[in-house]
Image (tube, rainbow, N blue to C red; front, side, top):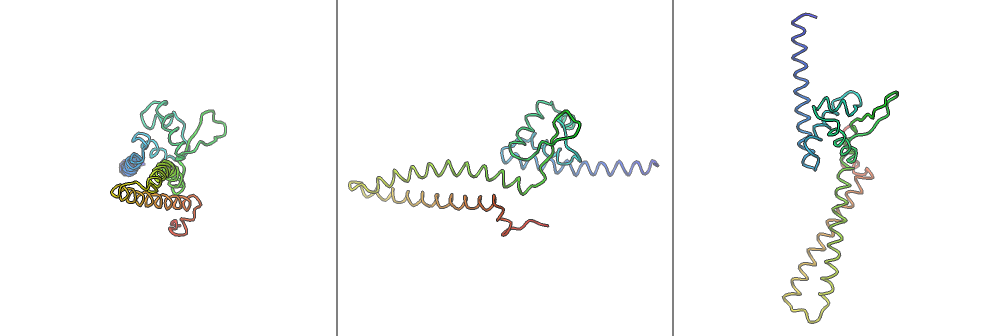
Length: 186
């Protein structure tokens, strides 16, 4: 290959690296918004651009980090269902690859987080609603307090209606019915 061709190839490789690094950085920052550390987000982005599954050693070399750090990061990505452990014939070490279905990643991540929030908040709302309904039935409740109870009950019902809606939205996501309303690009 001529020197001129080598220079062009080097330039092309730099452009590819810069483009990948930009995407990796954006993904890492985005994942940080959802409670995944920046370094684990960088690991995810690095794995995304691999053409094959990676071992922890390969990840550590690519990231310039320890195998222990890679193990911790991969475990977090596995818990979030963002990577998969894959079997490689003849390999003794575990290999991992990025889950390519980003739609399912979104569904899994947000369904889990939102259901936890719903359960926690609905429990508190129902308990408070029950206590306020008890007060509402009291004959000797002063009118000023009765108005406060009624206002609070209205707010609590509004919140319960919201969590019911959110639960139904999650059902649409998990059943994939959402794609009837917001189709995936083919």
